[in-house]
Length: 161
Image 1: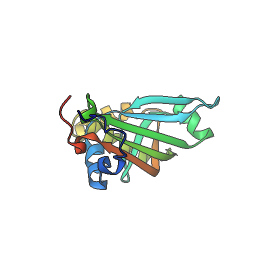
Image 2: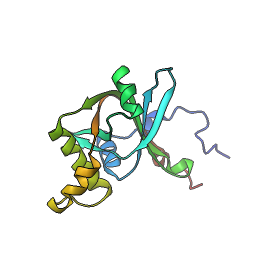
Image 3: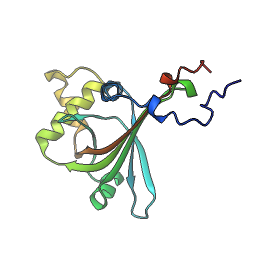
């Protein structure tokens, strides 16, 4: 019987996503785990809805949130999106880089509309008050990616588990 977990063979190259697959995966409506470094050196991870600002992954969050405090001290940021309930279906993208704290109202608005449209409803002028409330006392964190790690176990052709 063959080992369904790959039998110790390095299959990293087989399961990597292409840049187009990464873009399509990130365009899906999911939550992203955002991890920053706390003052004591521990990892602070939270699930976030995300959008896109100037083509980059970005989040809106309270200006005084712990993640913002952490990023002001140390801008290192890692974000993870994953999918799949069984080994043969696991997919994910890990983005490693630095977080830029954006306080410019026009850029915050752009990201706010992106997040609202992805998770609530298509943006129209009638939705403007809802986005304004969503962005009250908020900043945006824009991720500048230095390294991308991906996996898509569906590419292994394993039998469904």
